Length: 166
Image (cartoon, rainbow, N blue to C red; front, side):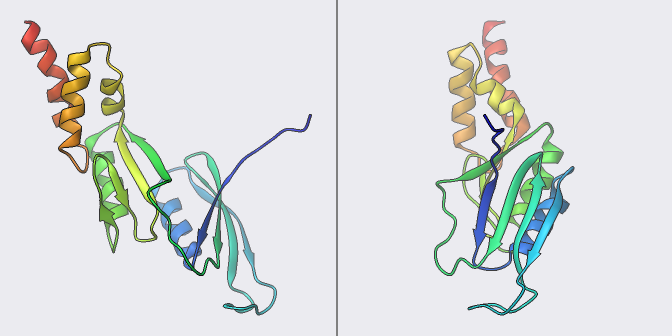
């Protein structure tokens, strides 16, 4: 049986090259691995335009393609990026919502290219899986009141269980 591989294709109306360069600059260890340009003019474009770009983002293979005349990306698909510190959460969040991006809710945001992201602190994910239902409930409640996740707020919700048991 042949080895199988999978990559995600992001189909942009235009601007795939700008988006890919932005993502590769933003996320460490990411890189463009191939760029294919149109060999001749075509409807909506000319020879030399970027058609597709293959890239690796946080260890995952992607392809970006130009030429999607209608439709946008939607909330149905988002990319989760897990963070360790508030500084890392802030850096990624601020870059993604800048220049026409938008904050959404509960760790979700949209970048200027229309891609949906979840910038998720590991402390949040660990707490949502906590064995104590009281901790899970407090953390869930705290998260529901946040847009960008506040590490200190999540930690305070976690620590509420330790304080009430003391």
